[in-house]
Amino acid sequence: MASEPTEDERRRDSPPPLEFVRPDEGQAPLPARDQPAAWVPRPEDYRPPDQWAPPARPPPGRSNLPKIAGVLLVLAGVIGMAGAIYNAVTLPSVAEYADFVNNNTPELVAVLQICGLVSIWSQALAILGGVMAFNRMNWRLTLVCAVFSLFTLGIFYFEASAIGLLGLIVTVLARPYFVT
Image (cartoon, rainbow, N blue to C red; front, side):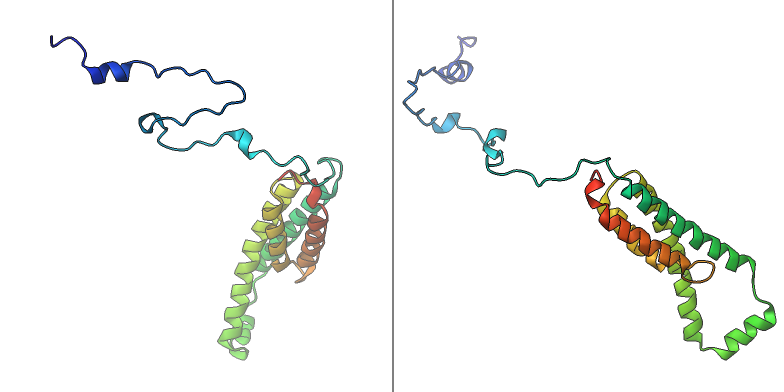
């Protein structure tokens, strides 16, 4: 007697009854015990409308604008690095440095050092943006890196920033040709 299944066990093990529905009839709602625990949407419910069409974009790969932007951004970063290395190698004498510090306020010296640090980080971001533009990857991040390339200082102060500005303009123009 202990081995015979009870009524509840028989009901759980048996499949639900089949109902045949005519094409013009709707299916009856499931009983509460057979309803699913969560609603799972079907992918076909989320198709775009038939009148919707993606905007027309030129096919990627037909223009050299991203490569030109990449070269300009890498060039801005390299010139900025060359300027930073040149300034690090050609240190002023002790008398010149003491004269500069004594004749200027400490705030100006601190601002110049902060500008130098921002320039170093901007050089790295300019090179990153150039590599990404050359590979046509992630236009938004490339645009941010191109904006940071404006803050690079070169050998004669602002030539790296001017090249970075050209890279920024070409990056904006090359938007349709990026993959993402």
